[in-house]
Length: 308
Ligand code: FDA
Image (cartoon, rainbow, N blue to C red; front, side, top):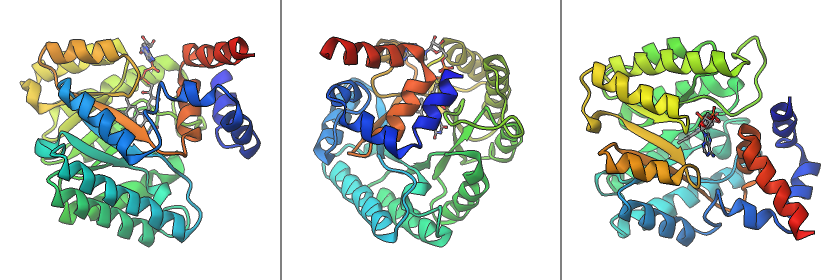
């Protein structure tokens, strides 16, 4: 219930103004977002790569409604990739990027979103790395997978996120578990109706485990995006059962979440990739983090009270 309220607030302009202008927000947001500038992203990347992790970087922004904003977003990705390449951070795919198609025009012009995504994939290939498409609410899933298929014709290593809370996802995992496919499996962070998505945690977790098994038994490269100890342990067990080496899959977590666990996995020889968001447009991302964990919300509310 609380989760639905926060997710509804994540789409409200009034709440956006309140949260963005609350004096403590920036300081709390900093826990999840290293900064607004390209240099902040490069610095966080350098630190994480030095600690043995790979990263994927998201230039914050979503629900773009005009062409100029879509172009500005794709320009930002091209600048980021060029800078990462110059700094030697894209070697062996250590740093890749994550793109929300809604940020490059998907909602009003799918062809434009494909053009921008193609440009970003080209910039990534030029510096020896790749792109993963984030997945947004269920009304965009078909369009995102359609664009993924088109991108993979020229950039076969382009990956995408699938969300275990959707009823369709086990079938999508089967469809996308072939050779060369890179799928990032997460539970799902949006508010979705019962017609399309499992509603209870147990059902979502059970779906995640089924999807994970399909991906691990397939020919592709599974990217296990979860902070949940049960999912991480299952990934390691299913990988071993399927005869996968540590280099044949990776665990992924968000910046600022379970940092010690990320280091522990690295010390065990498991590949870990951290998702780093950066930019000014942090509101939607931040609200989804508050919604998925009461402790995150308590931390934010406590900061408000202690500040006042
Ligand atoms: P969940 O939130 O169910 O928590 C289960 C358990 O994990 C907890 O009980 C606790 O033990 C542990 N845990 C979780 N958070 C913790 C914390 N902060 N500290 C300590 N323990 C914690 N979603 C989406 O819809 N589209 C997308 O494209 C993406 N992309 C994406 C990329 C990456 C790399 C990640 C990690 C996640 C996403 N997500 C996403 C978000 C995802 O859908 C989901 O909302 C969150 O990862 C939360 O789900 P978990 O699987 O982490 O566990």
